[in-house]
Image 1 (tube, rainbow, N blue to C red):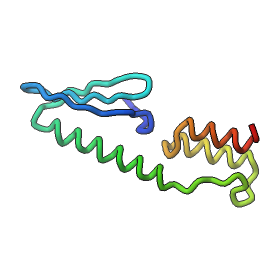
Image 2 (tube, one colour; image 1 turned 135 degrees about the vertical axis):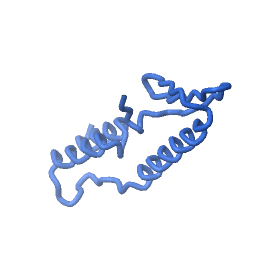
Image 3 (spheres, helix red, strand yellow; image 1 turned 180 degrees about the horizontal axis):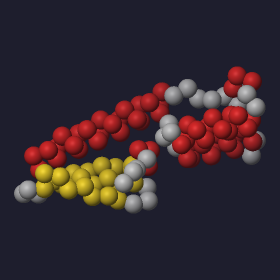
Image 4 (tube, one colour; image 1 turned 90 degrees about the vertical axis):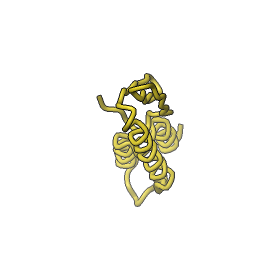
Length: 104
């Protein structure tokens, strides 16, 4: 299964006697991952490290101005769509910028 990192809203972990259950909460659904308790904390910590890294990259990304480098509006929209597809910006950010470019 594949999950876009930008759709993850929360990750939690519960330890049992033998298993750790890591719950990945996305905007539309939840996934439970059962792992051996001995490695559960390492996996949970790694998930959180990756999410923090993605969030940090997104927060430091250079915004695209409405007349970025003389590009046409269509080219700017294509660039924004590519950023969204790559998980660098969210769908909400894409739609807001699209409305701004189109003057809506």
